Amino acid sequence: MKARAVFILVFIFLHSFICLAQTYPLPTPRYFVIKNFKFQSGESLPELKLHYVTLGKPVKDKDGKVMNAVLVLHGTGGSHTQFLRASFAGTLFGKGQLLDGDPSYVTNDEALVKNLSLNYKVVQSGSETALIQAFRDAEKNKKPLLAYFYEPQWFFNEVKLVKINLPAYKAGCDAVPAKVACDYPPYDLDKIVSKKFADSGSPAYDLVKNFKWTNEDQNAVARMIAVDKLTPDQAAQKWVDANQSKVNTWLGK
Image (cartoon, rainbow, N blue to C red):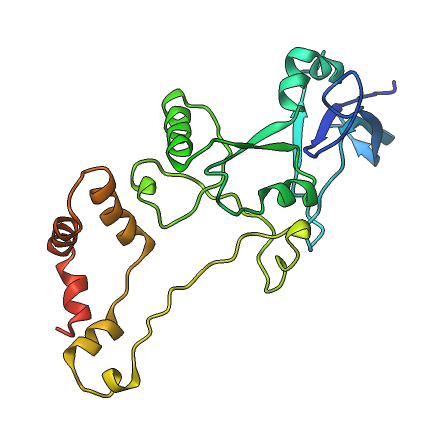
């Protein structure tokens, strides 16, 4: 008795594309062949063909790892065609939305979507306030939202956002705006003082030298000012009272 098994998978690569009459790319049938496949019963097949279809094109990182793949499995008695109906495919495979904030902000998002072959359309929310409200609405309604944002920013103390890692930033990868295909660069704030002040022996210089503030520290104080409506002096005093050990370190105590 010959045993035969066929498994059908749907492999989707999220990307941008152009097609007619539908908003997702045409499926391409493929086979993955396993040689000398053995069943638990002891029976075997010279080769087992796994039938699957792919939609779109894979985007790989420098190590050859596919970065944009989504694997969708159907039931034993089903078919991949059930995932190509408008009610499913139109939502899953159609163009998504990348929400930006104030249109005056300079971002690389249009270039990133194009150069990384992402299946998204960049949409402007109109302002930082509107962008924050969109995050609040998404959190309240438990719906996913992909958007441009930045830190330090007090809003991180209200809603915990998760950063999507893009291809790592390397010096010069954003030199040509239209060709950007890497993450945004991190910015370090420099402390600059005059040599005369540094050589003065003043304890004030030691304070400046020892001063360190994390994004979380800044977010906390900024929220006190923006949301709790404290004055900068009140917010600073409240933070100092709650973080005296850090302040003592700055003062060399």
